[in-house]
View 1: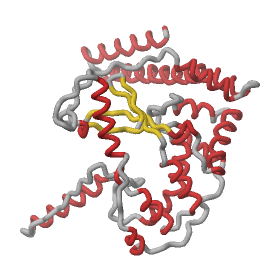
View 2: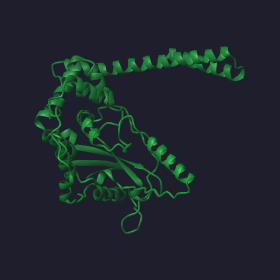
View 3: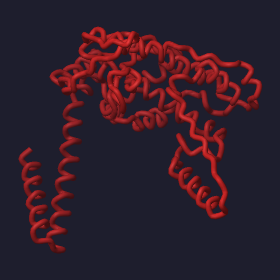
View 4: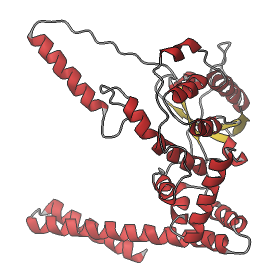
Length: 340
């Protein structure tokens, strides 16, 4: 801590000198001070992670194995209180009146998300006949290799964990040790072989985030599902298996949700098209379609059938179905916890 404070002081002094008497020498000194501070911060962060995770590793290799490791994880989480939040507005109920208590606020959100997530979209099964059936994609349903499992863990984003509170950095630290990686591999293979989702994965925490507009309207909030990190590891692995199949099916003009492509490419093309048509005095009509709650309203049953038609092995589809069948969705608003 003393070293970091001294480096921060040196950085601030170099910044002040460059501000009042700028010169090549002060610029070089400022760059050096910033570089030294950043390097020290990275070392401190690495040391903290190793020190923090040491009790977890000790638990894994001990006589009680994962039970001790989990006890150590819970101890590490102790004392981390929730961040402060702004006051929740009084929500508008279905009858047009305002909620008068946290319980009524929670009821408004329960009804909103029940309507959103509880609705099973209908579809015309005859659309399946329009698809061109493809041969089964090879090498998709074989047992995951150690390399694939490590890559799936490394691809985790350090986002909020699920109900257990076990964060992604913990799994990344675990795979750096032999015993830790064995634990992660056993977890992944148990799901892969049985196709059964552990009870801990069946509850998703719903974070309710405000969007633009009147915040007394539940429709102006976005629900972000926070799932167990172990669940995300398996999802990453399946996603990597499916990417080549999806890439072969995507239209060349599709830019969104594809690697090494972006919507900026499509925007550039549209702007060029408009400019050229204007040069020739031609009108241009563009259609923008915004599908409300598009992801939440995809007919899952239709999706599974489409995947089978496109050659995705039944084993992979069955694993995806298991991952999508959450039993519980839990959220907290104004201190009131509700389970959908």
